[in-house]
Amino acid sequence: MSVRVRFAPSPTGHLHVGGARTAIFNWLFARHHDGTFIIRVEDTDQARSTLESEAMVLDDLRWLGLAWDEGPYRQSERLDFYARLSRELLERGVAYRCYCSEEELEQKRKQAEIDGRPPHYDLKCWFNRRDDDAPHAIRFHVPDDGDVTINDLIRGEITWRKESLGDFILIRSGGFPIYNFCVVADDHDMRITHVIRAEEHLTNTHRQVLIYRAMGWDVPEFAHVSLILGQDRSKLSKRHGATSVNAYADEGYLPDAMFNYLTLLGWSSPDAKEVFSRDEAIASFSLDRVNSAPAVFDSQKLDWLNGQYIHAMSASDLVPLVRKFFDAPWLEEGIDVVKTSVHRLTQFSDALKFVVEYTPPSVDREFATKLADELRTNGTPTDADTYHAMVERLKAATGLKGKALFMPLRLAITGLDHGPELVRSIPLLRHASEVDSRVLSPLSRVERCIA
Ligand code: GLU
Image (cartoon, helix red, strand yellow):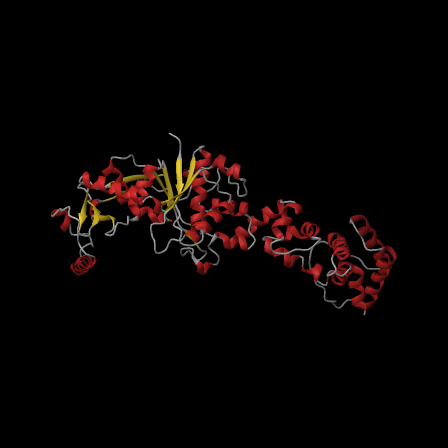
């Protein structure tokens, strides 16, 4: 049987890192097994779901490179299907019409709390079954053999007792189906073989398996992926900084790095590799290497990993990505000079600030005068050879070497006491000053130190 999995976002905002990781695990599992990856939009919560949010979530998935094979299906377009199935459940006698009003149910819940009983439905409409058209919900009856055991592919064997559940609603009065019902109906209809989803849905699984059984349907495999925590070990939330995928795009993370990092949040590759391509991840992905313990989101590690991806890219490939944050006619050369110091695309503008901005620092006047003479006489270095030749002549002219030579040289030319290698920065500044009127040439910089 070929593998079919789905990612089922509720479109109530941008895609969050937790959802993105669930999507990635589904995608990897599908690709590893040559299976089918399906997107299903769970938009039956009319108050919170928007088409705008659906578009954002789909964009976020595309940005991460998670192409889907089927969908997006929308639950809001399948209401007739759920209604038909609920009638089937009524006919089978496993569900019934419940005519209790909201107020009545609230009253019963309160009473149960006062009596110290679980807030389960008291079965009034189960014992007095009717089928008239007065406003009613459709409620599922938990059968006597309602214990459920699953063998979760990540968490192992899990059992729920019948007693922990009361009869629960499938379709609200007014006709709107509830989440647990739609999920089962769709997972069956879409022939989903493996339900890979967040741990928070584990408690729904009891109800869902009972619905499968009542319909006489095969139960899929389940794999519940653990939570993502912040550094303080509480559930990852806005307090911890960016949590939505688009915010990471805006902050200059690369989709490949994000994909790699999120894959590592809970999964480890069999050869303990931390930087891997999508193809490598597809080849080695399996659910039995997904950790059942919560994963801790480590933004420093993400930065490190993003840096690895940036450093591995050519400057010309980086140009269109960096251009969103910073642009200049000499951008490609600039990127090439500073890229090993950068961890996020947004950092290029800071790393290249020394090219467009210059404040004359205080440097020894005699040194600056000799340096200016050197640049006037022999020209400004355009490459490594001319740079090294300049350094040799400066050593001879000033009698300085090592730090005593390179620090004032760096200060006079870049205006800063740190930065990329001078052998790269000086030719960059020269070329940049030729094509960009904002950029002062090395010689004009040194002249400003003297003036
Ligand atoms: N729509 C649910 C959510 O966004 C997912 C349900 C499921 O995967 O079964 O959390």
